[in-house]
Length: 272
Image (cartoon, rainbow, N blue to C red):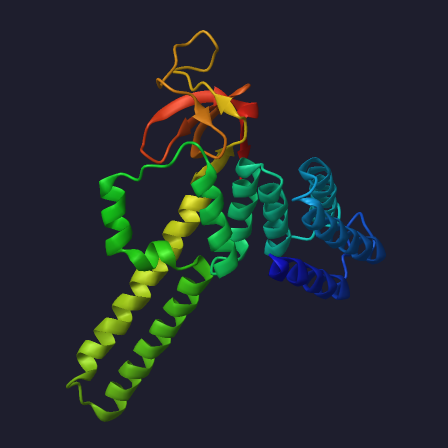
């Protein structure tokens, strides 16, 4: 986890060097907050075994400073969310650790340490997600769509398109197809598929609001009110990931990973 602490300080320095014209905090204040947060995080790590309660207070103070950098300093950085997730994880708040790891994942899609910590946090929650067989098959067949980040797929689509143009140019110059025809088809299909995947990612991002249950437990109901019967035999617990299907005053209609839908109070979940 020390990697994240070092990285956030370096990232903050880079961002500060560029200036924050519209930020509510000055560059000096941002630098001070970054230093204070890293120091509090280090102190919490030193006390987490001997005095978990005192460590939890220090982690919370570090989190508050990281949040000020993001919200008041207008610094959007994956390592900041990563460190917030680490602080929540070490203080025992699995749900908010998952929330912030998921936020970091959008900015750091291929960070191995982040992926490892997110997997660990998910393994600690009480309700384990069950992925439908159909979804598992899709994720296996179209692994490149699910495993690669949007930026990576966009870059690869550009490479495939450039390669296709080169192959076509060679054909136009030499008028010899032979093996070039299939090579051109491969590159063209690669560019089209990757571009379509990028488009699907964007549509999903715009049309799907995702969240995580942060309440210790919540009864999911069949309607947006306490008088409606429970949707499931057991309550949902902290750390359960969901998609928000609909919002009404005080209530969220959610969809779980297995496709089931229900209503929960709006305060029971935090949006990613």
